[in-house]
Length: 122
Length: 108
Image (cartoon, rainbow over all chains, first blue to last red):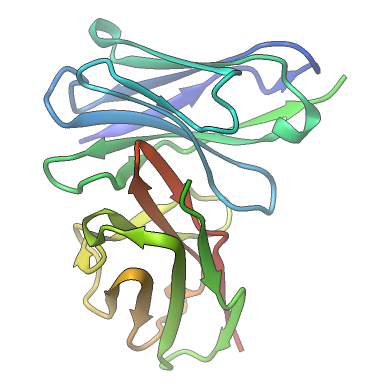
């Protein structure tokens, strides 16, 4: 069974750096075609793709946020970490991690974590 | 970056009716990389359709996807009570993934 779980602080202050961890099981990020991505959703609003890392350690970022984002993986721990610098109240959202299994569902997010709500407030 | 525009914003229908949701791209999208998701309140999105027309694992056949180029459609042939939710389209292109703004299917 494939699962992903997000963890991180529920509250951060403006200008701080947010660090989120996605811990997954049921697959390996060293397997060809596997990717893990971060996606966020402000309350009552649409989904926004943030970043993705693939099995080959290639990294991709949202154009509008790339200067603030860093994604990395620890294959031995089955974890993907996202850092976002200079947090602002507009970054308040539920942050999801999700998998892409390119050999089955090309570039579609087939399994999602339950999400973690992050509020940015002083 | 490709922008996806979904219409209508809200669709008010009764159970048993047919739902037709539209997703229009600002430039051509490969059909291989167009997906649809369902999201219910308080839940993560669920993959329904990938490759524009292929159903994901366990998705009922009342859900179907079609389209090519810049115009894609999600059709729910007969709405069941559990189908009332928000639906998002999503595309991949040029090392970037984007979502539409969503269509809410509500009970009339």
